[in-house]
Length: 541
Figure 1 (cartoon, rainbow, N blue to C red):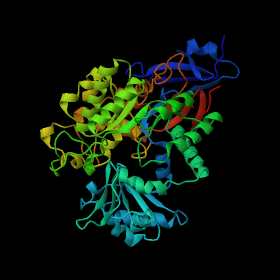
Figure 2 (tube, helix red, strand yellow; figure 1 turned 90 degrees about the vertical axis):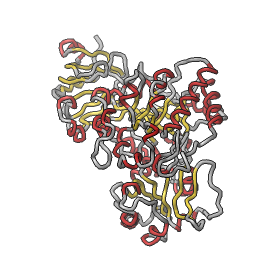
Figure 3 (cartoon, rainbow, N blue to C red; figure 1 turned 120 degrees about the vertical axis):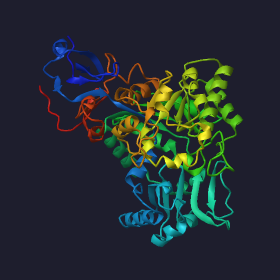
């Protein structure tokens, strides 16, 4: 009889195959689950070297799988930036940055993230001169809460050689006042003018940042992630991949990484990456691109004009026909495609592109993905199921700002459905959850809580009928991301033969109040059959 390396039992095991936990014991050998059953059935798998853990009333679940994040950009902003989420005004944000800068005397650039002018008393975009009052000797780059526009000071403008005559990128805008002078606000791809300089970080520091990321994910029970590229404002992804590969070679990856580089018309680089990155822990997954921006900067692409700016309905990153051609070409080569689409116009364009590609190239199990789906028109709800498209949501975004930031901009005539998770899954379509780290913290408990409660920044429930159950939220954070990564036969549920990526929580989520979800912590993380994190866990044998 084969003897297990680890045996794990609890009164509450959520396998992901049912909607309620069951009483079960799990036997693990090498990196796989070899049996799940009763304690009596697993007894014969216990040998002299087997580590046995009886978790009693604590909840055992599949490892969390964050379906949408940006590893290196998130690591940089999490560790080396001023946090501006609680700033109440432009002046308040500038003071926070100044205080942070004093603690970083050797940093060439001062970075920050999280400001949101829509929640300030004066709901206007900030100006470089306010930053200049507090810090003018070093360049400052501050990403807004959604990381789709940024605020810089005059020193940064000087260092990146930006002038009022500098050309705007194909998608994005350089903020200017009524006299044509620079305001210090950069929208969308224009942020690249600054990040090209600010992200020049030595490899040694990047290694430390990545190790910090892994330390955080194993503590939070995140055993798999999807790292998405395609943004002009992120660090060079090829540099990141070399670092990830070093960790993989040395057996140091404690979180599986599925990455999706930028979707381009030339697919040669993508084909090379697909060939060179196919390990169990670091694998090429698909291709990613942006269709639009975000609602608060009026760059999300809507079907009809903005209520507060009727002269625009936003723009697409590329002409619609160009986007459709991108999809047809990549789909023909059997690549999975993931589109950032926030406005209802962008979501419809993504669905149209996927439908045209299917009609031209033939139907297949493509598992294309639309990211965010923050605003949806009712006429497009059924198309996710019909086209086999996965809706990728980041529920914590619901709390990122006041719901008024959307309702003040989008007319009710558009019949807007906001973050319509339940509406989509009720059709039989699939939804998957992530964080969009660094936009929100990595902690899955926050996303699960928000998917159930749907509270905005003020605590007000926002289209509460779109809330899902706890069991659904857990599945969308485990099983669906595995399916979306084409790894449902290996990951996402607790079953015999699957890879042993397992998490133990210190509370049974099914036996506590919803508010207590936010207080729940990880007791143990097992990834690839090895205990990679434990918090005061003692084997019973």
